[in-house]
Image (cartoon, rainbow, N blue to C red; front, side):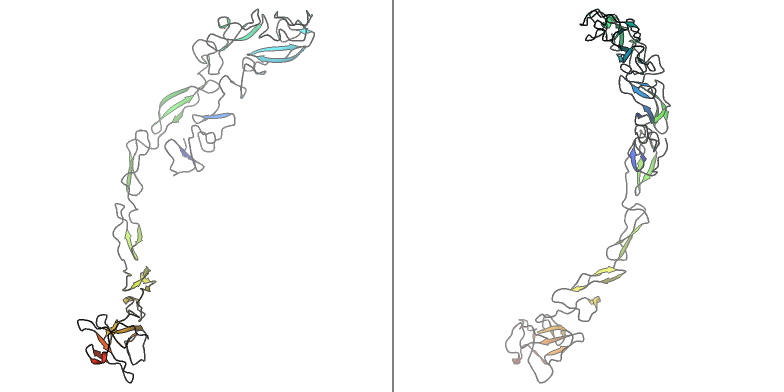
Length: 423
């Protein structure tokens, strides 16, 4: 069978790609045997071939499925028409036998379909006697069959046969019902125990042949004409049993006994040689075993008292300061370096959260109580905290000159308190 129109598609076992779908081309009506090979409406896809599949008790005649028990064109057999003769106004196929209705006043005593004998009425009521008593053109109407004439019946093996209508106008029993010639209909018409035995094969049966393709076998189907179809390869696999191939990322799969690929095992998480970003501006490469190597070239974007730093193009950006801290020098490399607006954060010597009694702010100040440190300044308060170990400092509000700092035990310090000094 061909490879379809979607090479590379991954269809389940037993199905092949056609038009973007996975189909069974041995039975698919729209893709029978090959993609796009559409069977006719009356056909069925059987073993990858378009065949007319007639229902049970119907026979394929002249390109259509017909019931030879009732068909006027094929009454009892293919190409056996049931047509009314002279003075016959109606013909019907009943049980595979042709029956005609004559014009009023005419009769067909020999039941040959031609009403060529004048009818002599014997009364108004129809009797079971094989005559048209009321000359209405129909014989023994109201009864099951016409007395003394051939009628349909059921044989001993259950097939449709024919026999002589009994004296009580009923069909003969099975022992008196004659079998008919064998038809190509998948049934045993002649009751010899064999189906369609006068033909090449019994319609609808399958003949299984030898191996074919990859793990497949040949099958032929007995068509509606009771002849074997060309063999098709059925259940063909996709690989040679026992063969192993690579799959996914570093995985392998083995072809099973049915010619189907097994589950991919040992699969990794990446393709060897591939790279991806990792961490903070780092990269990692997929190893030969389909696993990611360690992350290298990472950039540490963490900064003191700063949040939100991210790496892009090898550079860190997007920072903001934690509450109570500020980046007074504008340099993010040292983070947010000044604890602004916090009591006892600095002294005349700089940041001093242990012994300081001043408050830090960004910028510079001309206040006599302020000490400038370039990008920030420390401004003293009236009082400061007195630490038990004697390490604290305090200042006086000396308004007439530069700020002066005194040891904590200087009498000028006055009372002791924590206090934030404004800029």
